[in-house]
Image (cartoon, rainbow, N blue to C red; front, side, top):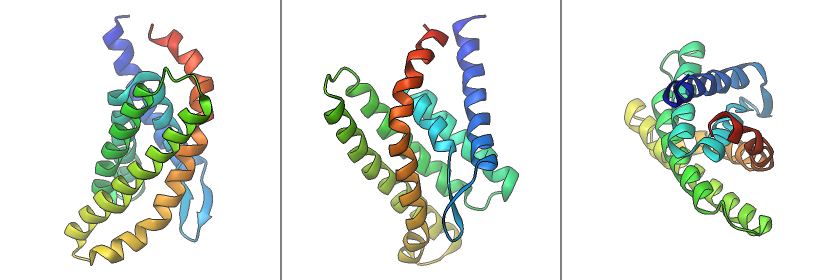
Length: 174
């Protein structure tokens, strides 16, 4: 199988895993919000297969998830937010990969996760929903605050998992 075909199959598997983990393993955090375990898949793809692969998995995973659950409701803002989050995290993971200090590496990754998720969820998702639903921007930010907190937590918790899985992922696409 060619490398291009392998990569395409890997992306399809990643998007499917994003949906499956988001649907089947719902861990309640707030009143009407669950941890999105699909972010674990997105983070692993960003860490092991690069910015484009991880961002595509997050973008397509959200679209498929929303189509299965609620049609278009929530999808445009969330998927655009995932582009911002995926791009920022993927570039950061790549840039600091060679750092020898795991403490500094984790601190930088955590800071970027919080900043990128704030930008992706609180700004991009909220502004998209503000424009689509004609609700005040600050109301949308308030509604997305629980998603921001839960998504940050999930992405931060995924860092050690990414490091472990990365050893095995290198064998998939040499």
